[in-house]
Image: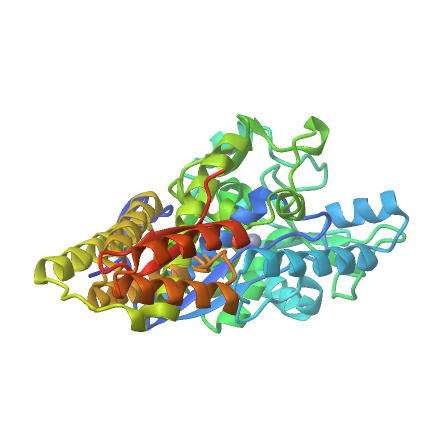
Length: 471
Ligand SMILES: [Zn+2]
């Protein structure tokens, strides 16, 4: 089954066919390291992580590049505020960013290039753009001449004149046209600077991504360029203009944009006091899966609104995982006590059907709300199978669940840690029940509850499970 992806460039859902299958060359715009990662960054990182994992699951070989913008106006501004160098600021937040990636369980990118380590490539690209008359130098700055790139606006779907009336155009007296944007900026005193044919300075933000994506994906056309919806204009529009003017080839075949995150209906901002970092979240909830379940509950392209109630909802879902995993854990330790029952053909095809619907949902532009519902359905059914000692069916469902959990980077882990004393009691109880010593079995049930605080449940064959008491 093919995957269909909504392509922001064509504004249509299209069958995904990379240029050189099974290879997929994918680039996503990474963070600008001037502050802690918040939940909006987490969503972006997580979405492209599960998309990448799903592409691999489908048999594609993904080369994945995610950059780090470590030189930018915001970093320079923060350095002034903290009385540090720009390099010290970026170093501090790169460290923190890596901690967040690890908290979130995001797979490392194949390459994670830093802008400051790729300045020569950016300079070379700017030189070619000047030679081809797509860029011009004024004093020690270089600008891209937007009106010389006829296709400008094709991603954001706006005409050049419409953009001119927009508020987001930089005002700069020396530019030929207000729409033109900086490729190279002359350094102000005290700012970080690199030598260039135009004097000491630094690259503009947009040229960083064009240069690094083409370099590290070793191509002129990427299969997928991804990022947040807020980057469509001007950032991605400008990346297209630069890269296509440079190479004369289409820059990316598919553009994937995710929707943005709000908190209680508001944009997240420090000034509004609703700024939640990744570290704030784990400190409060101790479980990053809750955030992932919340993200999965909404399609990636849609906006998502964060609230504590939604995290409470995720907590209930997570409890189901735990109850199930505890059962599995216990079963795997005591299954010799059970008499396996046959799994029927209907039961096996029910598992197949759920798995098929999971894949169909993911193939349809990564429809995670539907896929997540399938995952819960499979847990419920696997739970029924295990409670009726249907070993074969259960093991098959469990293997499938493991695959789905790893696509979403979720932990399929038990909560109750089983010590030998509990296992021994449960095994004694299983034996008592087999010998129809029901009084003894009952007193062992009580002992498990009194000593460890757990409830006991029985499978159809009388095998003991334990579970946490509901609070
Ligand atoms: Zn970018």
